[in-house]
Length: 325
Length: 113
Image (cartoon, rainbow over all chains, first blue to last red; front, side):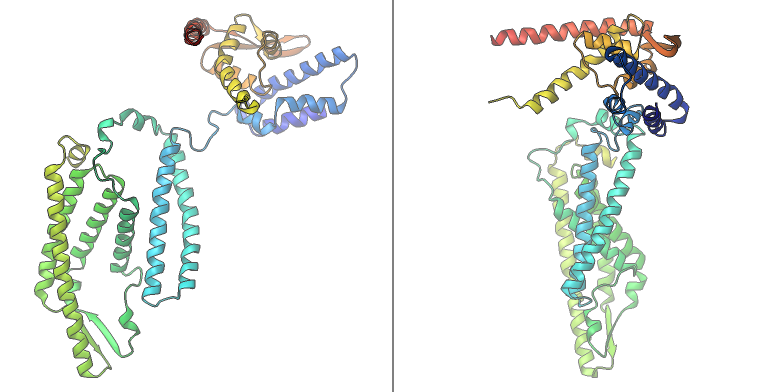
C-alpha cells in the first residue's frame, strides 16, 4: 500500500483540487483490483518489486495527471506556423538593429570592432530570449482566446501574393525598418549618432534653428516612413496602403525639404580652430547638406512616381483596396 | 524495402487511436467499471495504455456520451460507466461512418489486386 499511496499522492498533487479525490479514488481502485487479480493468479501476496512494476504500467505520475488536463501544449499545431513566422520576423529585426548599432559604433569611432561585436552579441542574446518569451506568451494567450481558428476560417486565396508580383526582400525591408527605428531614436536623443566631427579637437558643429523649428514635422515624417517600411515588409499585399504611404510621405517629405532648402544654411561651425579653417568647414558642410537635400528630393520624387506606376498597373480588387478603405 | 519497426508501430498506434473511442463506446453499451472495461477491450484484441483509459472515460463523460456512478462491489466502491442516450446515438453514427470508411478502404485496395 505504501508505494501505491505514494504514487497516488504524486498524481493528486498535479491534479485540479476539485477533481483530485475523485480521480485518485478511481486509479486506486484500478491498481488494487489489478493487484488482487494478480495475487489470486499467483496464490500469494505480490512482492514490493511486483507492486512497483504494476504501478509503473500505469505511467509516470506527471504524465498520468497531465492527461486529465484539457490542453497539453504551449503553442498548438495550428498556431505553431504563425508563431514561427513571428519569431522569424522578431529575430531578423533584432539582428539588424544590433548589426546597425554595432556597425555605426565602429564607423564613427565609439568602439573598436571586438567590443562592438561582443556588446551586440550579448545584447542580441538577451533581447532574443526576451523576444522569444514575449512572443510565446502572446501566442499562449491568443490561442486560448480563439486564435488561429478565426484567422484560418477568414483567410482567402485571393489575398495571397500574385505569382508574378515581385516578392519583397524580407532582409531588405527589415533593414529599412531597423534603420528607421535607429534614426527615430537618434532624432529623439535616445541614442548617440554620427558625430565623427566631434573627434576633431576645437570644432563644434551646431544645428541651425531651422532643425528645432521642424523637429515635430521631421519626427512625424520618420514615423510615417517607418510604418510604410513595416507594411512593405509584413504586408506586401497591401499595395494601396503602400502607395498611399509612399505618395504621402514623399509629398510631405518634399514639402519639408522645400522649407529646409529655403533656409539656405543648416549647420554652423565654431570652436577654437583658426577662423579660415572654420569658414571652410562651414562652407563644406553646408554645400554637402545642400546637395544631400537635392538628392533626397530626387529620390523621393522617383519613389513616388514608381508607387504611382505600381498603383496604376496593379490588378483591381486586391486586398490593399480593402485594407486602405 | 524492409518495413521500419518503429515507423510501423507509430502508424499502428495512430490507426488504433482513432478507433479506440468507438471501441470504448461499443463496450459500454453494457455497464462496466475501468478494470472490466479494459479486460473486455483486451479480450477483443484492443490493448489500451494503462494511464490513458480513465482520462478518456472522463472526456467522454464530459462530452455527455457516458454517464457514471460510484457503487460498491466486491467490498470496494467502484465507478461504473455506461452509454448515455446521446452516447448511443453517437455510437450508431460513428459505426455508420466506420463501415463507410472500411468499405472505401477495401474497395481502394481491391482495385490494386
